[in-house]
Length: 340
Image (tube, rainbow, N blue to C red):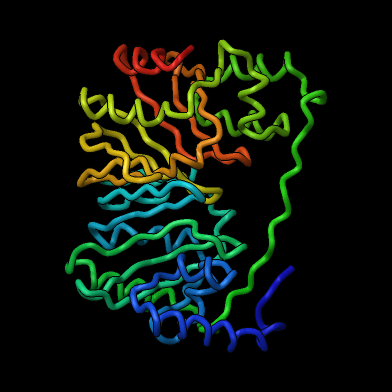
């Protein structure tokens, strides 16, 4: 079901409720307001079109191709239970959907992207300028924040060049249908395991899921213990704390259906704060809700360079929360210590 111009009699009420919230809590951000208002984050952002938000045209190849002009930025990707932020300079968008820059690495799935806004928000530390991207449901896909004064002019130039002629204060959203997933008894186990063993790159795992109509946790469950095995829910905390204490390089991934954000490097500061497990370094921040982890798996995938071993965390619906991997004997020993 879509909402938008056909139902714009509802929008003044939503605007008033958002204004009321800001009047009582001036520092409230759209993602928190969306939860209280019972709408998507994108719908809240759209309310300010023509004021502090500018709707952008969605020619993704042109718009995303200009992100490097903004210089040093903070890239933010949120899923339901994890947030990852990295700082650096965006590179060009590759034909495979990859963005590899200086300190920033993303894998984009532009077919999931639908809406884009430039936002200017007054904060205690000054004006916050950001580009925010949303999917067809109005859910957050990705955001980048200009971190240095030198990027302000480029930001305003990009916004001026890509502003949509229609600055309507609402968002047309579509409610997603649940994915169709094959039942276990319908799966060709021999074909699944043979295809798994024939992989030569970890990116081929998504192709495997599509080919057999599987959710990720379903594939892990059916793959066999030599390929994937469940481990304790506290495994993430152990891995992060050990990696920090031993200066062990990691690859950390978190994201959503529209983007996976990746950080490669040594973890220096890992700690638990309330229900959150956190990496709090200058170049990367990772926040994971530990109480949302319903399954933890050690997963082994063949590549041209040997077996890639990862720790993968999932919520109660089978959605991926985060993935950690590494190279070398120290990483393999750490992962193997999670077994049994």
